[in-house]
Amino acid sequence: MRSFLRKRWFLLLLVIAVGFSVLAPAWVRPCVGWFDPQLGVVLSLFLTAWSLESRSLLAASLRPLPALWAVAISYGALPALCWALGGLLPDPELRLGLMICASVPCTLASAPVWTRLAGGNDAVALFVVLLTTGTSWLVTTAWLTAATGTGVSLDPGDMMRGLVLTLVVPVVLGQAGRIPPRLARTAGRWKVATGVAVRLLVLAIIVKATVGVGERLTGRTTSLPLGYLVLTAGLCLGVHSAALVGGLASSRVLGFDRPSRIAVGFACSQKTLPVGLYLFDRYFKDDYPLAVVPLLFYHVGQFVVDTFVADWLTGRPVAVPDEQAA
Image (cartoon, rainbow, N blue to C red; front, side, top):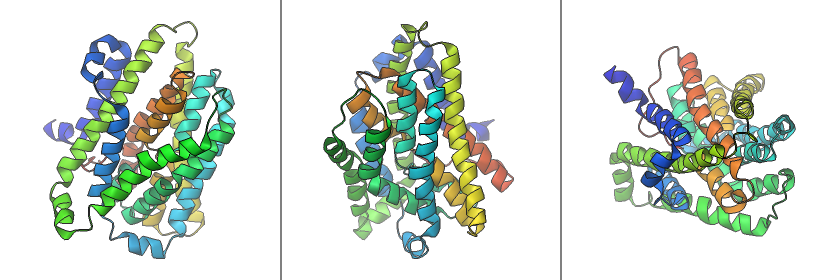
C-alpha cells in the first residue's frame, strides 16, 4: 500500500482535489483564491525547462523524422479531428474548449517521462516538446483564429505576443539557466524537488479552474445536463486515445524503431494544460466560461490513460516519477 501511494500520490491527489472542487467549490475556493494561474503557468514552465536535460537532443535532431511526424499529428491531425467531432457537442462552450485542448503544444515533461517509462526514446519526445513549444505562438494562434467559430474577437498579434511571453520566454530562460555548469549540476541535484514543485503548481492551476467550473455548474444544471459532461469526457478521452494509437500505428508503418514509435505516440497525443488555461483565461473566460471543462477532462484523462498504456507497453506496473509535470 505504501509503495502504491508513493507511486500514485499525484494521481490520487488530483482526483480527490478535482472531485471536491466540483462538488463543493465553496469549501475549496479559500485555499486557491489568492493564487494567480498565469504566474503559475510561467513558473511551472520555467522550472520544468530548467530541469530538462537537453544534451540528448543532438541525436534526436540528427534523425528528425519521428519528431516531425509527432508534430504533424499533434498540430495537424489532432486539431482537425477535434474540429470535425466538435459538432457532436451540443454546447458551443464545450466545442470551443475541445478545440483549445487540441491546439496547444505537447506537455513539457510528462511526455518524455512516460516515453522513458514505456521503454521509448525520451530524446525524441523532448524534441517534440521543444518543436511544439517554439511554434505554438504561430500554430496555436492560427487554429484558434480559424476554427473556433465563436463570437469572440481574437487579435492574432496579441495572442502571438502573449504566447511568446508566457510560453516561449520561460522555456528559453529555463534552458539558458543550464548553460553555466554549476547551475546545470544544481538543476540535476534538485530535479526531484523541482518536479514536485511543478506538479503542485499545476495542481493549483487545475484546482482553481475546477472551482470555477463547479460554481458555474451549480447554476447551470438545467442548461448543461449530466449527459453533456459525460459526452465531453468521452470525446476528450477518445480523441486523446485516437492520437496515441494513431501515432504508435502510423510510426510502425513508416518504419520507425520501437523506441521512436513509443515517443511519437505519447508526444503527439499529450497536451499541456497551463497554456490552455492561459488562453482560456485571457480570451474566452467571460463569454465562454464552460470552455474550461474539456481542458480539465482532457488533461486528467491523459494522465490516467497513458499510465495504463505505459503499463501495457512495458508489461509491468509503471511508477510515475517525480520529474513528471504538465
